[in-house]
Image (cartoon, rainbow, N blue to C red; front, side, top):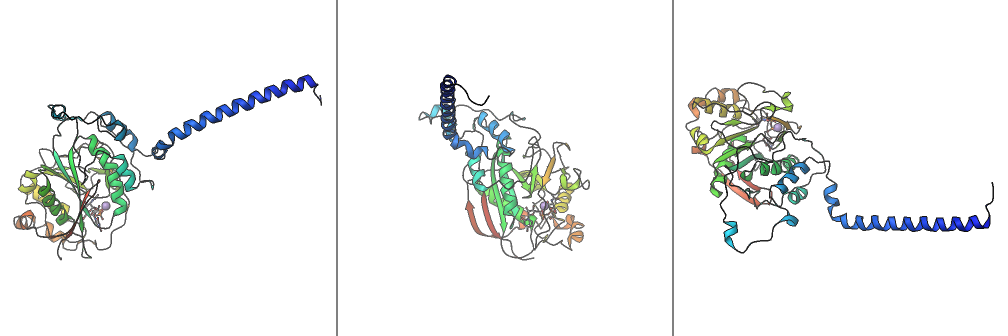
Length: 353
Ligand code: UD2
Ligand code: MN
C-alpha cells in the first residue's frame, strides 16, 4: 500500500501529536531531576572509589556532614551527657577493603569527604569516649603523591576505628641522607607537646591496610601492624621484621629509650628498634595474617636514601648504644609548622650524618 486515505491521515496526526507531547513531558521531568541532582554529581564521580562504604558508615554512626548535622544545642546539659568508652570492636568496621591507587584522588576531595576533622587532622568520636589517644607519625620527604593516598584511605579508616587521633607528617629538610628513625623520634616529641597522647603509630607514607579491623592503636606489647604486605607476597620477610607500620604506647616507647638517631640512609633502623624491644624483655604483638594484609604503593629507591653501609655493624651493637642514643639524646630544630584540616606538617633540621 503506497497512500492512506484522508481519514487515516488525521488519525495519524493525532497519534503523532500525542507522542510528541509525551516526549516533551518525559524530557521536562528528566531535566528537573538532573538539575536537582547536579550538586551530588561530584560525589558520583568517585563512586568507583572504595571510601563510599566507609563514609556511609561514618554518617550512620553520627559523624556528621554539613547536611546531616543536628542543630546546635545552646543548653549544655545535652552536650555534657555521660558518654561511655568506645567498644573493643568498633561496630562500623567494614572488614576487607579494596585499595587501589587511582588518579582521581585530590587533597580537596579528601577534605570534602572528612568534614568532621579539626585542624591538624584531629578527630575524636562524638558518641563515645575513644579508648586511646593516638598520634600517627609519618617520616617524610618529597612523597606528596603517596601522602595523598595515605590521607584518603586512612582518615575514614581511623574514624571508623573510633580513635582520638592526630596526624603528624615529619618532613626532613635539606639534602642529607634520609633519617627515618630520627624523624619518628621527633614526631613523638612534637605530638606530645600538643596533646596527651598515650599511643604512637609509626607509619611509612606508602602503606595502606587492606582491612580496617587492623586497628591502629596500642596493645600490651609493642605491635607490628604491617605483617603481610603485597610487596613480600603477603608474608613476613623474616620473623623479626618490624618495618612498615608499628605502634608503641608511651611507656613501651620510653622503656626502649625511643628509636636510634644515627641510622642515615635506607635500612637497619627497624631492626634496631626490634632489638631494643627484645633486649627490654618485651615481645611483638601482631594481627593475624589475613587482617594484617596491606598494600605498598610501588616505588623506586629515593635519591638521598641509599642503603646505609654501616647498618649491619650498628644492628650488632644495639645493646651497647641504646642507653645513650634515643629519645634521651634527641636534638633537632623546627623550621616550619603547617596546620591543615588533614594533617600537621612539621619541617625539621635533623642535623648531619
Ligand atoms: C622498608 C620498610 C621501612 C623502613 C625501610 C628502611 C617496608 C614496607 N618498610 O621500606 O619501614 O624500615 O625499609 O629504612 O618494608 N621516606 C620519604 N622520603 C624519602 C625516603 C623515605 O618520605 O626520600 C619515608 C616514607 O615514609 C617511606 C619510608 O620513609 O615510606 C621508608 O622508605 P622507603 O619506602 O623508601 O623504603 P622501603 O619501602 O624499602
Ligand atoms: Mn616503601
